[in-house]
Length: 311
Image (cartoon, rainbow, N blue to C red; front, side):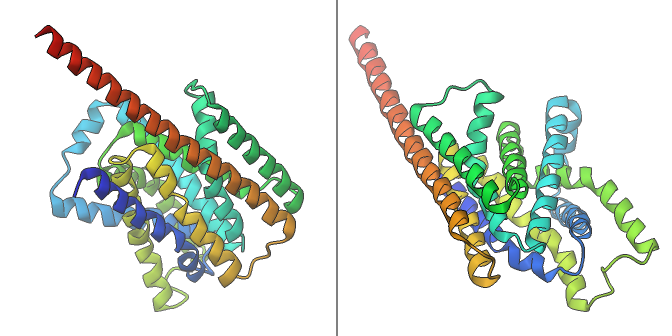
């Protein structure tokens, strides 16, 4: 199996697991989103530490220590994923699963905007149309909700930024997750200590099943993130962008069909605009990739021909 195909299956597994996360986090109630986040961070660090110890792979720490760029990028990734986790848990456990799905639907459009504003990239015509449709969708949904869909926008901005940082760093999945979770462990432990001393913690006080699920949140967090990192290091961004639609489709289905969240006509219209934008964005990306591939083949053929003519 080729590396690209392996990366495709890694990405498919990661996004499918993320798609069913709302069910898992609903089971962690009555813990608050911040308590759940703290346990996710703590048990993720424990799980990845055990994994790296079993693999005897700690050499990357020396590499990080010698590279301010890698260390700073990893700390930035930790901050971004912490914001993303907290926002997502808050959305799910406040019965806004549909809005969390919206956040991941618009993430590709946010990444395009980052490309223009941060990296100075130039958009093609249909990319501009897709971004315009996305902005219109946010306006329609703002009217429907009565406020900006801030959970969706925060999820899109944080995960879009996280994806860009991870792509640039190119670190192995387990190692990068260890650094990210470890960076968040100290504040997580301080917060859990404050909860415990004030008898505010739910951990260990609800049921044995609840306690086990809280501990396993580290495994549930680490596995798809490592799969995602492994996929991001192997597949083109266009393919990765197409795969990420799997999670919000599953989340939207859960929100409407399982959790019975409302989907009025105006909200459905807003989602329709987002989907139209994503279709344009995806088709344009595929066409651009094909044109680039054909151009590369023509250039290679020309160089080969020139080389044969001069030999």
